[in-house]
Image 1 (tube, one colour):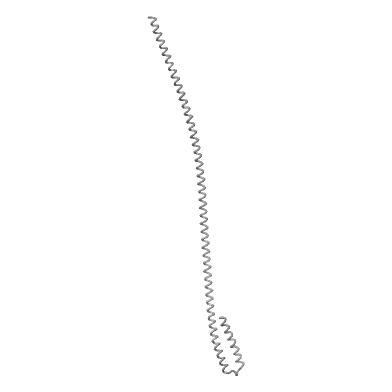
Image 2 (cartoon, one colour):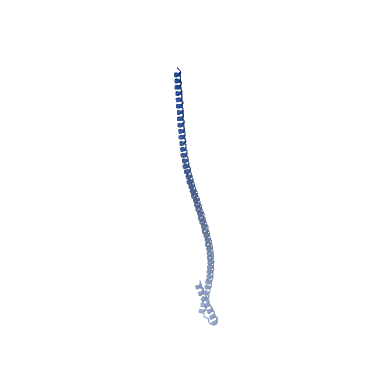
Length: 198
């Protein structure tokens, strides 16, 4: 377009020079010059038509530039909106991932605390069971010793009773022997006395 405009400027300049030359010559202009002038005027008309066409093309170019600028603006708006949407999605995803990580960390912490509490309860129960077992063993040994002592005392008591019973039986036996002996002596004395009287 700029190249054509330069050509038009050169043609207009040549036309102005020719018109000046024609005005300077006056009546001395011949038919060939008039023909050349007509040719120049025709070229001038063609140049004007060409210039008008160029202006029309420039208008179309401006319209296309405006459409391009508008399309570029729409594209930039769409890109900006897409960028904002992507940022929103990334932020949402990042927030969700962070919440999931925090939730997982809280569940892990809660599970670890519960496990520690269960281990502590188990250790406490084990200590209590060991202590109870020790106390039961001590009570068992104590009861066993007490039972042994009671058995020994009972055996000793039975032995004493047996000795006392034997002693009483011996005493009763001796008493019976003495009574029998006395009765025999009395009977002998009675027989002897009767014999003597007889």
